Structure formats: C-alpha cells, structure tokens
Length: 371
Image 1 (cartoon, one colour):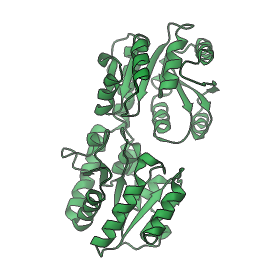
Image 2 (tube, helix red, strand yellow):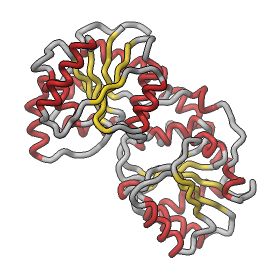
Image 3 (cartoon, rainbow, N blue to C red):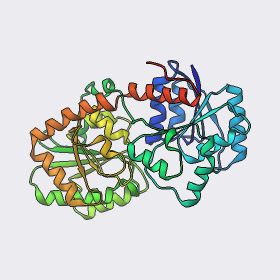
Image 4 (cartoon, rainbow, N blue to C red):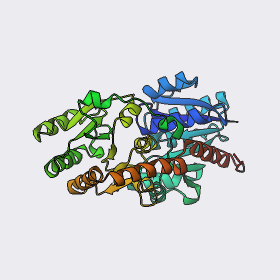
C-alpha cells in the first residue's frame, strides 16, 4: 500500500477538488493510505476530514517557495510519504523542490487544463522535467498541450475523469420541475457551471434568445452555480426578456436531483479539459450538448452517440443543436442510451482509480500489477 499525499493550493469545490475527492474515496484503504495538504481552506478540507483523511496546512506563496518546499519535505518525512500527487503548477513545482530535502519521494502531476504556458513557464518546465516522475492528462488534447508546454512525452499518460455509474443511475424523485414551476411538457435544460468568463454564459444566453425566436415549444434553462459573473448574467437575462425561460438555482449540492429533473445537459465552456459535470449528467442518463473545445470531443463524438458538439461563441450553432434535440424524441432517446453506454465503457471510476494507482507504481519504479 502506497502512502500518497494529495497536494492542492486551494481546497474549494470545483472540478479539480472533485477529482481529488474521487481518487481518495475509491483508493484509500484499498490501494493507498491517503493524506491531504492544502494552503487555502475550503469545502474539500471538510470532505476529506469527513472521510477520515488526515489534513495539513502548508503555506504556499509561489511556485518557487523554498520555505513551503522544505515544510512539505518535513511533512513527507514524518508521514513516510511515497508519492505526492499534485494538481496545479504551484504545488507541482514546490513538490519537486521538496526532493532537495527528501529525495526518495515521487511526484505525480495531473494536468486538468488545455492551456498554453508562457515562454518563461515553458522554460522552467523543461528545467524541472528531470524531477518530474509521472504526469496524468485527463484528455488527449491535454497530453498534447503538456508536451508543447515543455514536458517529456514518455512520462505522460491519459486517464479520463470518471464517475461511479451505479451511484448516478439509481434514480431519485426530482423536485426540479416543481421548483421551476414547469410541467412535464416543458423541455428542461441544465447548465451547472460556475459563473466565470470562460464558462460561456453570455453566449449561452444569446443562444437561448435565438431559440425562443425559433420555436413555440415550451423550454426552460436551469442555471446552477455561483461566481463573479452571476449578477451580470442575471441582468443579461432580464435585458433580453428571458426571465420566464431562464432560472437561476444558485450553488447546489443536490446535483443529482437537478439531473433527474432535466431533459438535456448543456456545456458552453471556452476552456474544458474533461468535465465531471458532463460525465455525471451522462451517467444519470442525460444527453449532452457541449462546445467543441478542449477535451469535450473525447466525450461527445460519433462513436459515443451521446449528444452534439457545437461551435463555441456561435449562438446559431448552439440554438440549432438545442432545437434539434427538442424536436427529435428518437434522437434524444438514442443519445441517452449512448450516454449511459459511454460512461460504463470509458468513464467508469473503477477504471480511473486503478489506472491512477498503476501510475503511482510506475512513479515508484515498480511494475504494473494486475487488478
């Protein structure tokens, strides 16, 4: 059993935190002995403590924070850590610097993005590449970007984000339609992204305005989440006269309730590696519309048959896809079947956890073991 320290600067409530929580939930006490260290506290700390995972705070002020690196090394020595699993460049650099005081520890980095680094960062990546033991990209484009960012290709493996199909396929009696004040004849769409510039809410709202001009069928878009652009988005909805069509739900912990009250999940993001929300929605039986950005093509494609890809920041493309699924019940049913099948075959949490454990073994110089 490997002792693994999961290291994260901000322990909040976004996709990266969900990734860490998922790994710990499915590996701890079975394949690893999990520990968690962070800088800024948040919801993930509470969840780790609820699972009985020892948590520690390490102040991390920059990528090259040697004081933080030494503190991390001392913690790893005390806990006899085998692997530090990092998730952002700041923590990853600090973990590699910690090897100066604790050379035996191995560093694994999961890349949750598809974004180019600047010249200085690419240069420092190349300089530190020798200290990096293994890397995980959550989508194929992520692996390509890591190589472009200066990391060695032979250290990188693609392991898709994943969920537990059984947990999401057990139905619940949803209260969403009652909350929205709509009947069964209303086509309900859900988007649960935080309100940030790269999540595409401005263009999504313009798409809904266009859809309202093209169809007489009743529809409603439920927007769950919070964020800096929430109030701006509310003003946009009101200004376009969409207040009856678009409803704001706030940050929700009952996401399964929302999935089971919806007919379609919509992702409008500009930057997306491999969204847990999309995969969760599919596991609950929802077809998907997603922008053709980042790793979305790894999820939504002809082989999967789980939904439609659209062009980012193109309201016509988004509105047309929405209308197509609204008007074609057979296509909607087919996409639902494809979504369930894709999750079982490609985005199953047990496969993800086992593949990640094998990466830990490789980082430690051990041969892969059969599950």
